[in-house]
Length: 188
Image (tube, rainbow, N blue to C red; front, side, top):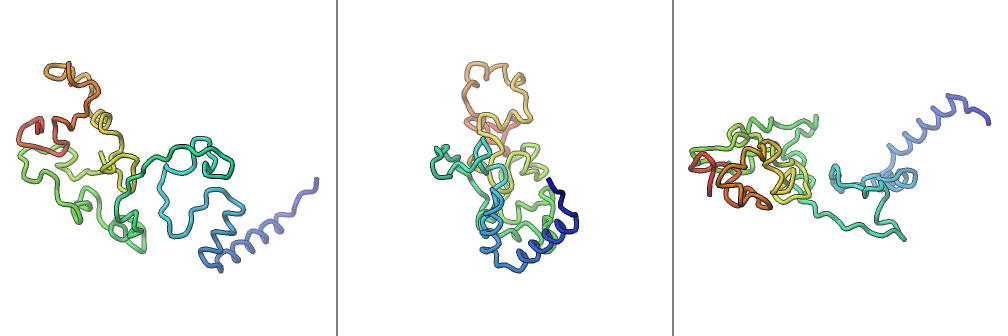
């Protein structure tokens, strides 16, 4: 087996990089997808965490059984490739911090008239419960309705009356408003 000289490898890599940089996005996609799996299609937003199936293989390949697709709920600006609704065009950074009211630039504050606010709502920490780009759960929740509250709240704290007989299998939002309410426990 012969070893390649490092300058040959470097020259080849630089040549490939120069050729790809001069190509149109569609040509670049065709070339890269020939050599690599999972290259994102130009103009299609990449949804982190929702790519190939559990085997790491492209489940839509011919002759391969298709896995059931998980519905993905996407934030409208993300879905429509309007990144500048939240991000600075030049740096990619957020135009302002979430806690400084970034979400409220487009969304009306939830439960703004409620005398009692849920902690994350009170400090504009929307991303404590909601994903900013996409989620397999409605309302861009980080988890399903029966699990999301237990990211912060202990199930054992809820085992006293009146929950003990009714809590199993129920989502907290059946009785409680997750953003705030007129009473201390945000009962609807």
